[in-house]
Length: 115
Image (tube, rainbow, N blue to C red; front, side):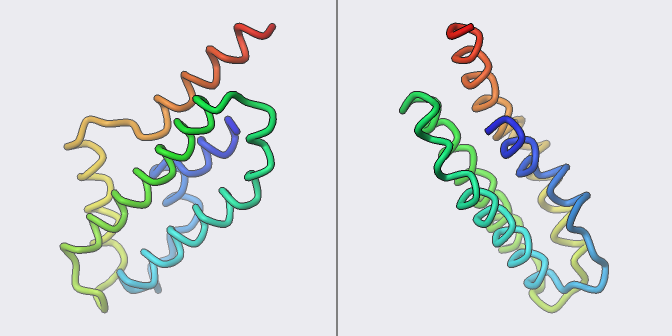
């Protein structure tokens, strides 16, 4: 789950998937599909963590998707994807909210308590 959270962090997600040939809308779809695919791939991992940690991970996932959708609403759908990427980064910085770090900290505390 720690790897999942790292993979959906906006900076890592965008760095891995950025393609200047995408439009804003195509990039939004690629980013959200990647998050959902990663989440679905790791869905069974919830049996190994507490319901509280799982809830934090789900919340982080939803917040990243929401940040992408919010950023997309201010871009021209057919414009170059760089506009969306810029708005995602600006949104994360302006919100002063690290969507995935909070969930990662909960997960780390849980693992530390067990070992």
